[in-house]
Length: 311
Image: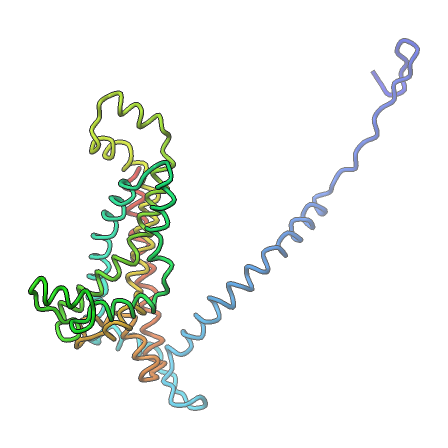
């Protein structure tokens, strides 16, 4: 049938053709959409790229004054790798992060499993668990600096006078390490617990009903139903806790200042002393870039191992 043909006395006319968009018009529209990305590019440039390039610039120079500097190439990088003090701080920081993960991840999951799933106590438990996360980092350090003191702190006084164990984190390196570790566990285990609790709440109720019908024990339910479905949130929790513990600064700086000796002098504290205390911006720039690369590489290894183990 053609346009204008007559059927049963009526004339059928063809519908007007819609204007066809040319490839040039579509390309012009796509290019306009890129302007929406511009705010993100500008934000990233000011918050990450420009500061990073500034550090790179300092890392290849020996700066004597704002107008007097000498190009030294990669000398500061070689020195940062060779210095025994830096290597010891790296081992110390890595050991601290490993201990944090070994304690906080199982403890956070155990707290999440023990939290109520319904009723009034759900809100009360969430508020109580989240309280340490609401306290600023420097305040956490101040709290534990006073709490763990052997003379006036409740915790330190109880350990010395009630338990009869000699404890003084200002003089003993082991006591200082334990104080920093316990403080970090107290402060950040709630984050793991809340993430794990959110993962547990997302498991459909029929899974638990089926386990109950089969007569599965609590451990069997956790091993075969809850734990496999927590893999995603636990991957996030492990990455967050590793990055934060590996870059920890404020709490140990407030409590021990890196002491006694270098017992709690982590990489971040060493870097701060170098950049702010000694104003060695060249070595500090090289050190911070190596520090940055170590965090990126270790996080990539963690993420790769955790994601591949779940396949």
